[in-house]
Image 1 (tube, rainbow, N blue to C red):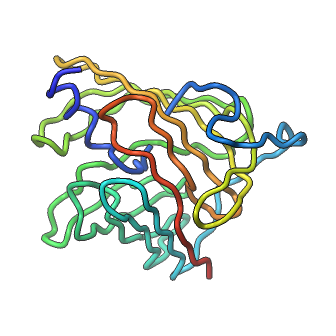
Image 2 (image 1 turned 90 degrees about the vertical axis):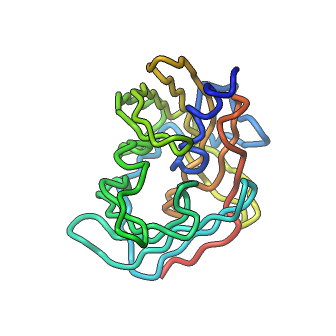
Length: 216
């Protein structure tokens, strides 16, 4: 992978949201639950003051609910590398950022990426083609994404042990600089957030995990 390829994936360093892949069953010590096939998770509701903190990446990150808006919410977050001092995002009922600005009122780079698509259940797949702005140079590139729920299992992180959906995420940059990446995400209905990420492609950010949270 050349330097441009690495930069093309850098925008989704975090959570991306971000943000991962087709993997072997129960990687990284996950324990599949026998009744997981029957678990269905609807879109969660949030309260002002709900807050999550993650560690393990280039810097500690957070998401904090500061207001409710229709079926969605307004959050403050530094998940985006371009927004280390915090951006404000409007999220829809799926928790997807549909718009965002930094403290100067400039638009946030990463919005619209559909990392969740409720209801969640084992075997569900969804795809999305979306143009995203790169953190590295501000250019817009076309990306294809594919997510799949692989299992419902217990996962251990710094914040505790939680039951979570294990999701694979494959992403491809379809622009002039071809690139693709794979990662795994765990999303917990208990915590209403992603609790862990494991990256399988060099240069697509870092592994991270939930360190603490507050649910009001």
